[in-house]
Amino acid sequence: MATEVDHYVPFPGFPEWDTSGFDSATIDQYESMLDEARKRATPKSLERALTVATRYAAVDTGALEGLYQTDRGFTKTIATQTAHWENALALKGEKTRRSIEDALEAYDYVLDAVTEHRPITQAWIRELHAVMCRHQETYTVHTAVGEQQQPLPLGEYKHYPNNPTNLSTGRIHHYAPPDMVESEMNRLIDQLRGDDFHKAHPVIQAAYAHYAYVCIHPFADGNGRVARALASVFLYRRPGVPLVIYADQRDDYIDALEAADDGVFTTFLTFIEERTIDTAGNIFVSLEDAIEHESTVKRSLFETTEDKRYLPSLSRLLTLCLHHFILASTHFDECHPRLILKSRFETLEDRSPYLNPRNYLETITPLSGFRAIIRSVNNPETPVSAIYIIYSSTGQLPLNFNIVEIREDHGNLSPVSPPIIIPRRNIFPEETKSNKALLSAWARREVKKLVARAGSFSS
Image (cartoon, rainbow, N blue to C red; front, side, top):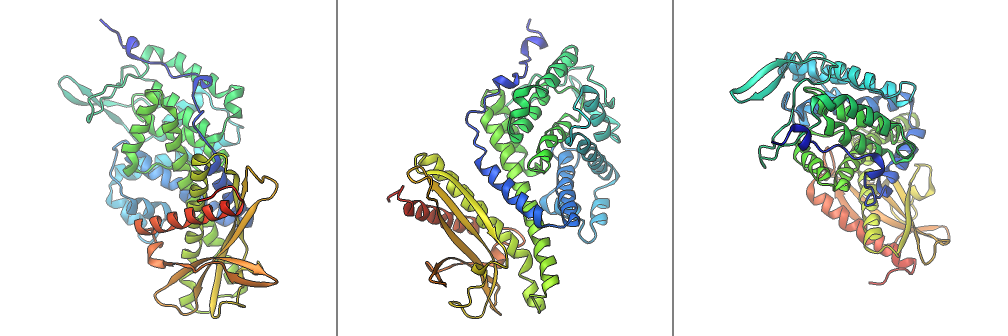
């Protein structure tokens, strides 16, 4: 008869963790954007943005394990602490409130390991579990006679098997048996201390630490919460964000983990990267909103309440433009590897002359812009670039934004092509599906034009 040990498949050592299909170009672009925004933001804005992102992670980490139910609206209310957030939390009940508070305390605990002054050890992980599950008294055990509630030992490795069954597939996943937990955790810590691991990209580090840990599943319950907090250690270091996975992303999350079980590690790596990109983008928007608001107050550029309605939408649209541009350039990298050597983007400051094109457009309110730069394999020393501005006509109702490429010719600025129009309602407070399709098509068209200018692509 096969034993539990026979079914358990030990997690791969880091050298065997196949990352050949992972390309960090996109997340690196977002990290660069975020770094530039941090340089211009105030300490208060930086603290606020990171706190909100951490609260997003803490609110949904318990929901992913079914401790309570959430939706995006509730999560946003609690994370951003909008009006009546305490009432919204109270309506969920005392158990939910305590679970979220425990998670917030656990993420504070995680930050102690970010600077590496507190190394990741078995003792540290035990303490993290104890903090994360502080107010969870019991956990559910599935037995032959039905579900039973058992006391949850905090910070103590499991004494009984905890192998779950995927209810949709019937697949049983075998974690490390109790008598192997100590040795497997020792092996995990050794992998996290290896030279190859320390040289790896943070997304790879986060994905590996998470996956290897859940392969062991060392505690009776709370392992998913601990795994996401552990992965956040590496992402907090770079690009400076926690791992945020929303409850409605659970199915994709489980699918990615199961793909890794089958040896397809890139699927899980990509999932972690996409979540990191989402969080980095949200922090970027938050910082840009704060920067725009602070600079507007200082310079009194906007005089009316009507004009101030533009401010939150400005940063969001700029971020969305950059997001779709990055994805479009990455697409060309993948489909035409001999065309694009590297692409990068620079956001333009308000003081840039490119953002004051009143010599060709009358009665506009210039808002923001960016420069896209592409180097081709054929001409690596001669990059091509394009400058785009985002503006809105003064007094224009309903509120619409215009995105247009501009060209400078003997000191005069002129549009290269007609602008695309983005209604404010399509991007704020959330981007619509139709807007995603529009910006995606626009970005692909613009990248194709840039590559054509470099003489590296012909349609």
